[in-house]
Length: 285
Ligand SMILES: [Zn+2]
Image: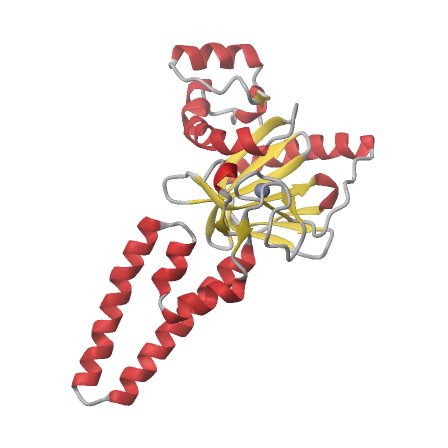
């Protein structure tokens, strides 16, 4: 990793007509770190869109004086996930194909990380103190090279300062509205009053009809796509029924709905999905 001084980066950003929020404290030299074969312009062009896309969430999630050191995009258990390292903790944001951060959101204090474990190819494992693991099936090679030293330096400082905040689990859930930490198995935010789907409630809705669950997750576009797929499957159910194969039609229908319910259960177990935000407290979503 080559850490560049902040000044040339600031100049290059201005030259490229790119602006970062002055309200966020970036350590520009590590956020836009580069490999020896890259030019500064390449490093900035590659990373800037992701960093910029994270800003609305970072503005809400960061503590006062918390500094952003590193941002990258990987895949955590086959779900696109943005990894942010700050001088205090690791933040994880789910995201979509357009790299816009989306719930669920998580935070891990460095004192909760026991080991980084590079695995074969572009896979990566992070072992946590409570025995859980973050299994990245994809962590870009180049980001991996930068991630390790940036993490090690930040974690070492935290250790020297003896900072070990109490947690309910190593990877804490963050409120999708105000970004307060919610203890394990908690589905209502004390800070802002937002409520979150309990996995079973969401699973039952999706078992009845998948799009209800996805609409409940506030992913309207995804829900519309799922409605179309679902209607396509229903067409087969009706087709088999019309052919007189009622048992097969019922079997297909139940199996489809059960898989939908199971999938949504796992989604809600993974992290907090907003159910309702008191009107006066609506923030990011
Ligand atoms: Zn909240």
